[in-house]
Length: 84
Picture: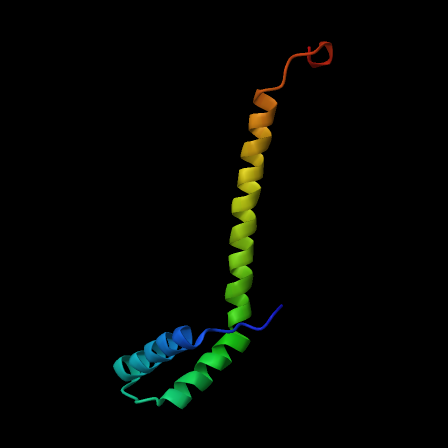
């Protein structure tokens, strides 16, 4: 799996959310560096679990669509002497 990386804008948004959470839920002011460190930790250690769940969800949607296409193909089959 490739490393989870965020753009500078995404990283700012995420670190701001982490800092806000720490202030509101834990009454701690986590500096930008601390928030970036925490974001890196979660991305490295927990991110793969979310990433894999996203893959499983995508695979499930894709398989459902493939079943729909397969059903549609069977519906337009022409009868032959073998299908009787």
